[in-house]
Length: 115
Image 1 (cartoon, helix red, strand yellow):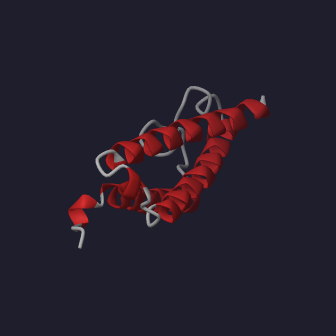
Image 2 (spheres, one colour):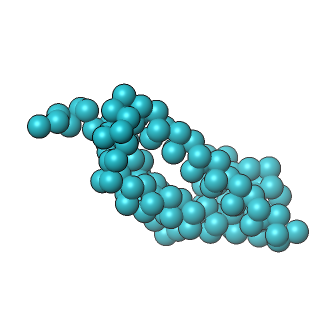
């Protein structure tokens, strides 16, 4: 039996997925009322005006929720442990980095379409 500690990919993606789903729900349910750099999706473009700010929060909540659900779906697959037992954590971290970049690109492209 494989110890839970050896399931790096499963733990990493399940935790990331759970936190992402919670963050997406929180951002959708309680979006920030004012432009700030503490809570919500904040970038140069999103802080241009209130319309961009509120649209950025909507886009970010949608994509963060999608990322969380995809992560939770991929976590139990845990196929990387079979083929690459020592690299699964690295693949999980790469997955997280790619999804963060994807989130930023999607939100910024959505805001750019408003211009």
